[in-house]
Length: 234
Image 1: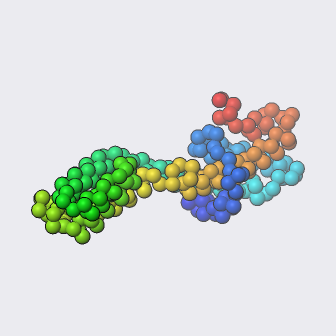
Image 2: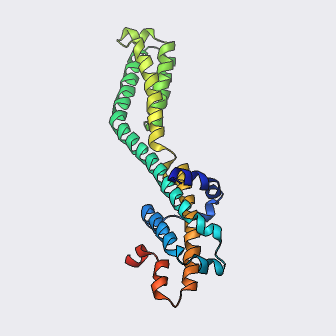
C-alpha cells in the first residue's frame, strides 16, 4: 500500500490512543520509520520463532503499515507547519501597514469628531489597547462608526472607500493571524495524529524488539538486528 493508504488504514486505531498515553518522538521521525521498516525485514527470517513464543501475527504484519502511516502523518503535519510559517512571514510584512492605517483613522476620526462629545468618546473607546487583537477589532469598529457618521470624515478628506478598506483589512488580518497561529504546535490536530501514529508504531516496534531480544539473547548475530542503530550511535 501507499503511505496514504497506510495512513487511512491505521487512522482509527491511532486516534483511539488517549492523550495521556501518547509518546513524543525522541529521534527524527523519518529515521524511526525507516528503522521500523528495517526491523520488519530483519525479523522476517525469524518470524516463525517469534510467533512461536507469542508474538502476534497482527503486530508483525502491521509494522510496515504503521511505518508508512507515520511517514504520511509527518508529511501532513509538516505541510501545516510550512503553511503557518508562510503566514507568519506574510503577517510580519503586512501587519505594520494595518497598524499604521488603524492609527491614521483614529487620528483623523479624533479631529473630524472633535466637536461631538459622543462620537469622540466612541473613538476613545475604540482606540484603547494596541495589541494585535485590538488592531483587528478596531479596524472593523472604525469602519462601522465611519459609515454611520460619514459627513465630518468626508469633510476632512477621508473617502467612503476608507471605510470599506478598514472592514476588509480587518477581515484579512484576522484570517492571516489565524493561519499564522493555527492551533499552535502542541494543540494542532495533525501534530496530535502524528504523535498518535508514532505511539502506535512504537508499540509494535517495542513488542517485536523485546520478543527478538528474548529469543536471540545468546545469538549475537541475530540479536543485533533488534536494537536501534540510532540509539547505538547516539
